[in-house]
Image (tube, rainbow, N blue to C red):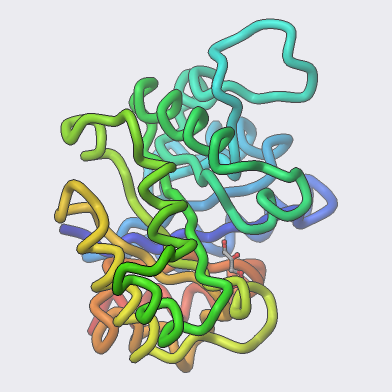
Length: 250
Ligand code: 13P
């Protein structure tokens, strides 16, 4: 299976011109990669335009969120069906920034997850661990663990078959956008724990949180992750391309 390298541009850049420039540089820079699938998740306003500029399918696209309904009176929302119909393959759901700023609850995330999977999108479900990994591991021994419970809640009501389009991204809050990545060892422990919690053991698990050129390869080689979810550095075409190429070659 190909490694998955996902660029989450978040609320950047602020002009279409910059978005096109960034996209074009990335596309050219990664056109020869063989072992990885690169997914770009730009803000919605740029999404369909960038899709139309990418006939060769060197990169795939993802939305940064979606609603749970197909259509209707839901001002400001984007439906999973709209994403699908625009040629988008992936969607990120449950990102910690949406949980924080849009107050998305586990219940909302569960509805979005189900709707997106039913639409046929590949879902990158983000989960975090706000405590440190060791304390999180301790919570598993019969005590109420926040993240495993959250995860189980997010997955409730889905059958195994529908989970084949699910990807989980472990994004510890302390590492997201802080420049303080989770150590590969701790991330690996969390990865193993997630594997034990999910119904379908084949679900790929990505790491996200302060990924840079220095640490990116280690999460794959030493940490056993099947890919990366990259924020800040994905806005720097040169650095992002370096990461993709390095991972693809090694
Ligand atoms: P950073 O890579 O900027 O830490 O962001 C990670 C992230 O939130 C990706 O979804």
